Length: 452
Image (cartoon, rainbow, N blue to C red; front, side, top):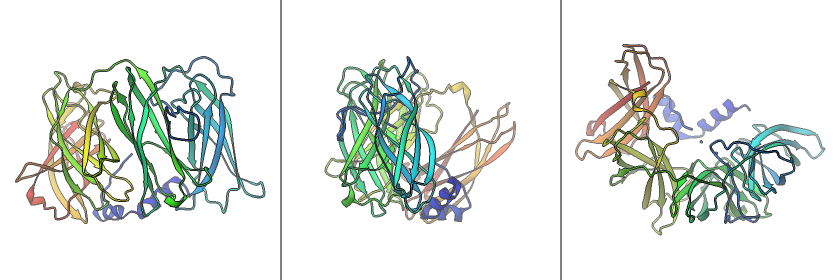
């Protein structure tokens, strides 16, 4: 089954998608790799990879990487994934590891072969890092896997030491797993976390599944901490078959960067949607003298103070002007055993690329129609190009506020990539989860649009 067919199968299994189809609208979403220090796995300490490019330097011997183990697992679609562990035995970081994989049946016949790239951002000296790929193929069995390193690069990096704490995993009734934890910078240097990866092991200490974080902190000043979250979905995992979890990451000492001067106003619980995702709303104010672009990282805790989830919200506004206040929404989602979120912490991070205010134009919009089906609301309208030039990208942002309290009850956005000529119009459709009993008459419907 090819990627498109698999994606369609995934969507058909999710009730949310059926509602989207009923609304005849479209929506979209998107998601890294890693080693570590003080890791709570069984192999040597220190692991991970880097997320911005680290310049390759010097020569490699080709003998730095040792494949420690490999295994195959079958997902709920019958497709096989290959997972493994590799170790950097050198005293310098290496990465962009090119691995040749082969899968054989019991008769020694070749079932699958491919070359993959792993640890694109580097592995620390003596560090361990997982590799993984979904073959998108179905076989009756895989009896043997061979993994051979055929190429790699050497990096120059000032490797940082960080602490990993509060690591736990949960598995829901569908067998999907969620691994969460926090990274603590106990050094006196600014640290950049390039990525984080995690793996679960069976009762024979064989690697079952591995993945990289879909949420993870990036910048940590001395003494700061931040969360990570790793989703392992589609493998019908059972807690009784799990012996342990392992975390791998790569952290680098970097020059000190100023923290974003922003104020996060009192955030509040909004609602829990039909998929058990917890929505938290609030507002953020730019107290800098210049426009800035930031994202927000949230860490959720249960009634006992244990970390249970993490979320990141990249503000759809291209920038926040000096003194401006804009709304935000953090959605704590993913597999749950119990969505017991009682408190949360929110920390701002500067985005990698700051957008220049002059690059964007504010555009007028006209709201036209609202439809509700189940736990979703579809909001449609038109955005107009009132500038004097053709635009290649338009972002429309929807904010819903309760009329009686002015509190935010919903946020959504969409990017439109169609060419928008001068005086032209584009239709938009934004679909967001809404609370049970939602009434469009009780809310104020605000839209903002930016083009460039």
